[in-house]
Image (cartoon, rainbow, N blue to C red; front, side):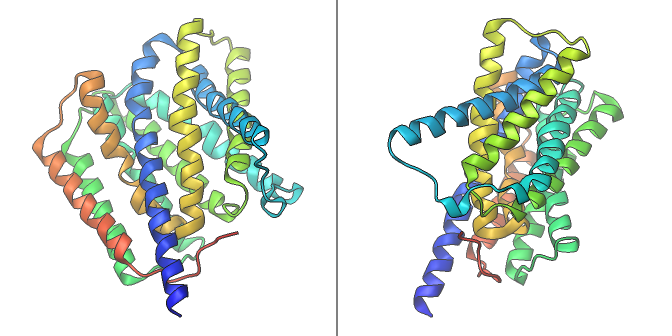
Length: 307
């Protein structure tokens, strides 16, 4: 019994580290993408970001094979996973980033980053109501506290000068990623790098081909390379970490940790974009941190996926 509790606690801590790391890397993608948008079309940028994630993960796989590190055959993707993988690629890798970038083009960097709080709300609500995940009261309290902090952060920060269309686009992106997170949780026991590589290459190539076919121009080489690099770090590495978080702690709890992504993005927007953050937004961050503490201390109510 003691060994089982220790193992559960270790998985919970590992899930927390992966979730927070994933959130930080994804959070900074919003202000970085905002910097790139004046130089590249939103649809093309969405393709380049995910293509960068996919190409980077291919290089990582090659390096791992050269080092003699081969994935466990039991965790490889199978043909039976294909329908779910295609849905994940289309919804999370195809629609989500395009909608986000369209919205970011019409909002301030801080406002766009703060609206990303809604992804955690959609993920948690779908996880509990549709996919029937179980959480303890303490963990549920943590999710609620994080969401309260996220609402406070969104209600007090940023300038929504882009109008309803920009806001609606980011909200729709958050809904797409909420669905994506829950679908990904269903296959999170698979090899994380292989899963994300498929998603990134499929979505990135698809968006880029469709954008070019629609007449959207490619950027110069320098901007293209920067876009690919941002995609590898903020999408590729971030999603791999998120898959591990989903595996260890489930989608409902993962949503609480990932709710810190908007705060990381808003904080990064200050030096990167020259925007400012009010004291109320810092208070909201403290509230979110308190919610995360509740999530970490909450005892797992189900056996984490370790396959």
